Each structure stands twice: as structure tokens, then as C-alpha cells.
Length: 338
Image 1 (cartoon, helix red, strand yellow):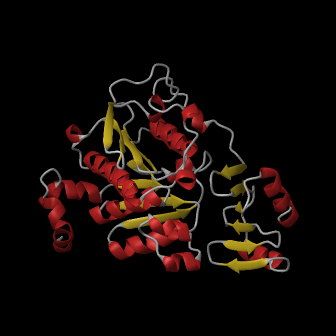
Image 2 (cartoon, helix red, strand yellow; image 1 turned 90 degrees about the vertical axis):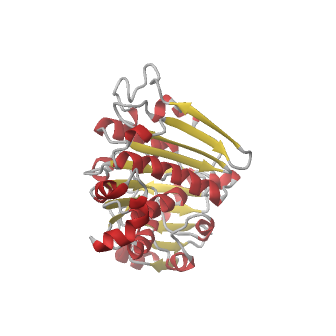
Image 3 (cartoon, one colour; image 1 turned 180 degrees about the vertical axis):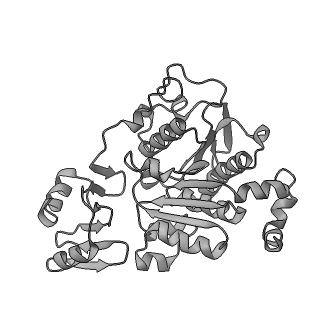
């Protein structure tokens, strides 16, 4: 307990948390989906605050372009081609060894979302696409778990805490057909907007986790740091006929899974194999025809055609250097075969 007082003394001096709130935080389990720009800030705050268990999930690995805004990564992580979840866990455990950090390298999907959410008290959105956000929204409302949404692009941000049975859901504010458009990879992003959005997400999450519901903001907040404006939309009434929080149909949980996905703005196509990948086996197969670099977590393959493959043990293959699905499938068929 002495160590607890020393580590969290300033946080416990904050009256809305105090000693009882700190004990509540230590008993909570949260899930962060996506450990990129938002997710690294989210998990950093949660671990430093002393949340008992933080489960982090990400499908990607650390790249040079991440370092401008993804606070838990460094140049050594890039050189090692570490998966983001693994690199983040290593940093987080050095920050607070008392917190359980569960790192999972995978793509959140219909097939695994139940197991990823197993036992957690709250889910935080660190993703960069609305397909996954609607999946989280629907899964959370079906299971009755609060969902802390956040999004950042350019100098603009949005955040809200959606609580099943108490507030409307994400679909009540953002229609699925309105989510295509600008991304960090097409129009850029500045680091401060990421920090602020994630901080808004975490502070609402902390209010909920310590039981101070009267302090919850209960709005969908949008703001532009560069343009100096902010707007709060009150979460008072659900959208009539909402398929998630009104009809309880949860459409994202019934959508057909995409085996082939274009990762917008990144010149990358992802293909999900039905079978897992043995990195040692595939390293031996491909090193005869391409330049191969293997880590314990993934296999990088430089093709003679110019594109790159990244193979993950869970069956995912990234074809980097093209957004042409036909081209990606052709290369996949040529080198992988099934």
C-alpha cells in the first residue's frame, strides 16, 4: 500500500478520485483496440493511472512514419519491425509493472471480438477506421459495456462515451454511409490533436470507472485545434429506428467478413488466410525467391516485382506497394498459392 500511495499520491489528492477511486481503478479491466496514435496515448494514461488490467490489440507493426505521433514507439522498434502491441507492452511494463498488460497481435473482427472483450469493464477506441468502430459499437451495446469513441485527423477531433442503456450509440450520430473520406494518410495529422482526443476519452473513462457518473460530459464533442472552434452535441435522444441501440439488430456483428481489404491511403492490401502461418516454414519457402527478414512476430518479404509481403502468424498477409486488389491477388497467388 505504501508503494500505491507514493505512485498515485497526486492522483488520490484529486478529490473526485481519492483513495476509494484509486482502489476502484485498480479493480477495473479495459480493452484498447488499436495501438497507433490514439491507442498509445490511451494505454499510456490508463497504465500510469493504475487501471488494473489493460488489454491492447493491434494488427500492425511499427513503421518510421508512426514516430511523429505514436508516443510509445522509438527508432529501435522500427528497426526490429516489432508489432505495435508488443512494442507498446514493453514500454508500458517499464512504466508501471503493477498493471497487467495483455498484448494481442491480431485484427479485431466479428470472429474474435467476443473473446477480445471477455471480462472487460470498458472499451476504448484507438482505431483509424469506421468499420472497426461500428463493430466495437455494436459489440459493446450487445454486451452492455461502455464504449469510449475517439477520432483524429488533420487538426480535428471527436470524442464521446457511449453507455448502453443510458445514452444513444455511435450510429445515432454518425451514419455508416457518412464515414468515407479524409484520413491521416491522405490529409495528414498533427500530434497535439491526437493527445487531446485520447485524453478526452480517458478522462470520461476514468469518471465512469471510479463511479462519478454525475461528472460525465454526456456529449459528442467535435473540435478543430487549428481553427479554434469546438461544438458539443448533447446525447439526449437516440435516433429513431437505430439498428443498434433501438432495434438491437447489431448489423456490424452480422456483416460478411472481408477476406480482402484495402488499407486506405497506405498502398496496402490485406488478405486473410483461413489457416495460420508458420513463420519458419514460410521463411524457408520464400527466401529462395525473395529477400526475407524474420522476427518472432512477423515475416517481411521484399519481392522482385517491387512490392512487399508482411506475413503474420494469425494468417494475415499484407501486400504493400499497391492498392490494386487484382494486382495484390496475383502476387499472393504467385507466392502463397492458396
